[in-house]
Image (cartoon, rainbow, N blue to C red; front, side):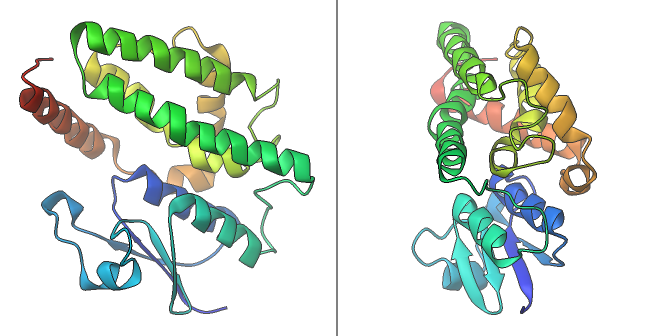
Amino acid sequence: MGEVKVLGMWASPFSLRVEWALKLKGVEYEFANEDLLNNNKSAELLRYNPVYKKVPVLVHGGHPVAESLVIIEYIDEVWKDGPAFLPTDPYERAQARFWARFTEDKILPGIFGVYSRAGEEQKKAAEELKENLKTFGGALKGKKLFGGETIGYVDIVAGWLAYWIPMIEEIAGVRIVEELPEIRAWFDKFLVVEAVKQCLPPREKLYDLNRKRRENLLATQGGHP
């Protein structure tokens, strides 16, 4: 089916999504880490993603596919032998796409708001994020994972939250999921999946990177931790 390569960055949750999707399907791939911390984008990245010039990019048989949500669906459609990520029922499939979009439009900006602010601004951002996570958790409807008994599309899209949020809570000195048992239970169930664990970046290294980024953001804004 052609060689598979992922142009990504080790600390990018968006790149992680693509790796999870490939691992779950049992697809062998090469990972090329882009030096984005020094804004040193490779010629390969610029050639394969000339529009956005961002990671991740999946290169399959020489053909590039960009944007993590698009890539996950591509992987699901191409490699049929592995577990299906999206439901076959049109309504359920539409719901999965809706909650994936909710993650991008509501939860992702909320996490950045908590991470990049201090004081009253951070407190307000944390409350908004909690409400959005509560709404998101309601979509589980008593299920083990968003995909049911196995990892599905929404789990892959949102799964990075299980690794990043506890870290951000510690770095930013906030409590976000303490009163959200559905979300905490989902975090625990997701992170024990072997394919998930295999791709996670080293926690200490990621923690140090995120701590320094927060310090730089606050310094730029004239705030303080």
